[in-house]
Image 1 (tube, rainbow over the protein chains, first blue to last red):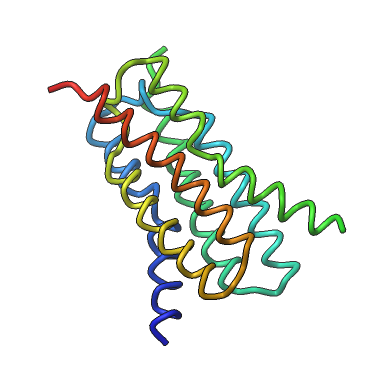
Image 2 (cartoon, rainbow over the protein chains, first blue to last red):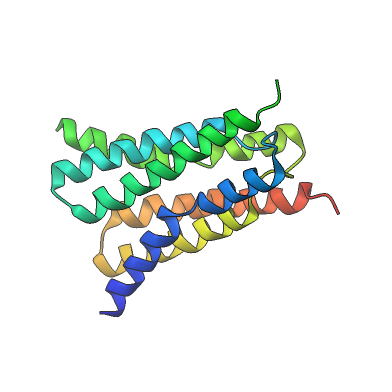
Length: 85
Length: 85
C-alpha cells in the first residue's frame, strides 16, 4: 500500500511539474530564459506516452500523460504570448 | 515491435527533456524566467519514480528516472550558478 502511495505521489509531482513554470511565466510576463525546445520535446514525449498507454490499456499512463500534455499546451501558448519579437 | 519503439522514443524524449533547458541556461547565462519550483518538483517526482521502479524491479523505470534526476541536478546547479542576487 505504501508503494502505491509512492507511485501516486511520483505521478502527481511529474504530471503537474510544469504548473509552477506556467505560473512563473504568467508572473514574469517574460519567457526569455525558458527553453521552447524543452516544452515541445516534453509535449511529443507525453503524447507518445499517451499512445503507449492506450496500446497497453493502462489508464494511469493515459491519464497522467494526457493531463501533462494539456499543461504543456498552456505553457507553449503562454510562451508565444509573452515572447518578445 | 513498433509499440516497443514508440515506448522507447517516448522514454528518451521525456528522460532528456530538460537537456535543451540546460543548454539554454548555459547560453543565456540567465535563469530569471525559469521556475526553480518546477525543477525541484520534477527532481522529487523522478526520485520517487526511481524508488517505485526499484520496488517493481523495473529496470526501464529505474534507468529513465535516474538519468532524468541527474539532468535535473545539473539544471538546479546551473540555476543557482546563474541566479542574480
